[in-house]
Length: 227
Image (cartoon, rainbow, N blue to C red):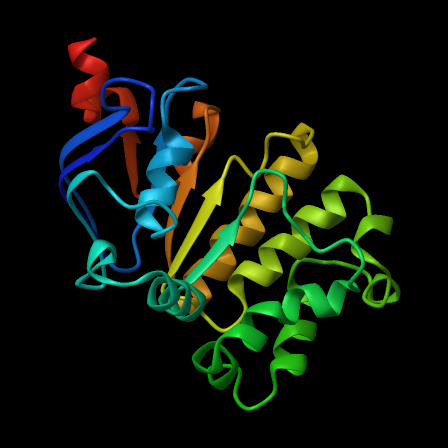
């Protein structure tokens, strides 16, 4: 699903490399827990995996396609077709309803819409049922929801249309213990049902036991080891 080779990335004007990764392979369907302290480059690495950022050198391939070989518009289209992202701050559109937020990926990707068995609306409703969001909330604006409810909407949006890869960037950081446990169970079950690969980033190593593979970014990152 993902293959990184000799991947190096530096922020403009900040001196040396932030990331320098010799090799990383993540197989289709695998559930990977990526951890490291704040500021070690976890979100930057996710940006490279998702084609939002492009490496200074080396390669980052999604399903055999190097992100750097695509122009900006083609990267956007590929990301819409094959990736679901759960952002740390959720990034819901506050003025849209819950259902409209969940349906957004299908509006940008015909492939994701086609995977919904001809009815993106029915798929969105099914996902919202699965994440246990009350139906009375489906027509509310996203900014009227609690933090825990917004997180569930963000998960449903990422999962609609069965994307091959789901990336989750510290999605449980704002949740208490009970909500965190419920959310993890829902996310892993949904990814298993869709056959989606999951890359889950967190500094909370208590969650790692739920995953197939555990990766430490400071140990992978030659830039960190050299500093």
